[in-house]
Image (cartoon, rainbow, N blue to C red; front, side):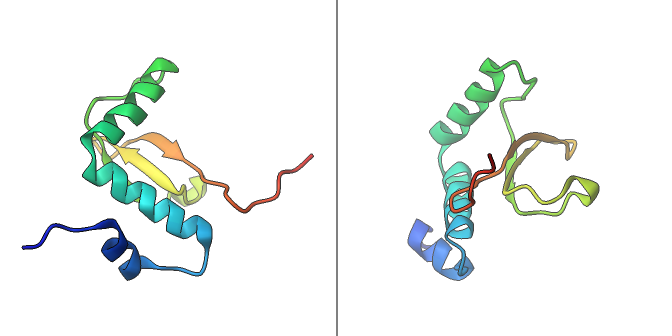
Length: 94
């Protein structure tokens, strides 16, 4: 089996939204790179979040009343430990 590449992955999931493409790229990087995963987890831990060292990364999955975060780091018990909401093209409110 050939090694998966980022452009091949994105071409399968391409959307009209730049934010969606960037979100999918981030998910791909987190799934492929141990260094990227460790960096995001260390950042959350440094902020005081109780995050385990191993997470599964998902994207844009509905969370009922909690909405649909762009990226979620989920633990072995299927609990969201890290949520990332990307706002690339959104206007900021005052």
